[in-house]
Image 1: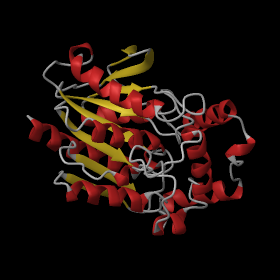
Image 2 (image 1 turned 90 degrees about the vertical axis):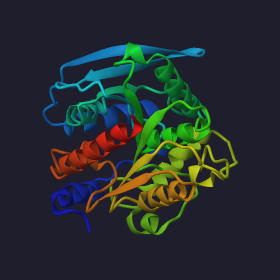
Image 3 (image 1 turned 180 degrees about the vertical axis):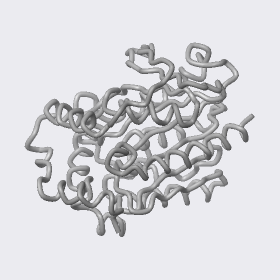
Length: 311
């Protein structure tokens, strides 16, 4: 059941549903997504400093934004990949979330503006995630105390890219302290109970997501490739410990729970946090559902425990 604080929002979304993404250009969708994100961000959380930086990766440079909170403990740097269905989203759309998370965790956040489809289809985003993790671990002093731990985090499509990156680099001894996986999408052909129950009218229409997968994959037909469907990885031994956050009324809930189970099967430490009554993307809606801030508080506590365990 949807949380009472979210019912008016869900009803409004149902009353005026967004046009099917096939009817709108990617640029128009990005502008609309940005406008909505800014409308719901509320009063931005104050932090000590924000600095735009550039990540010089192989053959390209990615924009990024470094958040330094007040009371920075310099114990961990969080590398963050935003959501947006592989097609929309940027540093500004998730600025408010990064501010809140950085302030609550007392950790620095490095938000990365990875390449989006359809201009940069699969596996560009995965390559950006893998190369970003490697670069940050090799140049940690550019962003934080050189002895700080590194946590990788993503939400929605960004979480998907991070799960794949963690799996692909699990044998490289990079020393990632944790992966924080927030309501990920784990494949274009998954039809779980939560998809049937919440796939229409709960802020994330599964038909729209499937369309975005088409843009992202750009003709790549092997959906059994674990880089496309991470639940298909046949070995995740050695992957970083994980915190998996799911929303009760999210069509992607069950696949995220399945990912947590898959990690556990391969001996990876996992903590699963379920947000009762919440919908996909709820962490960016604190002005509508203040209860989202309680989840952020809980997440911060879990992240600190993982950092201490890594030392």
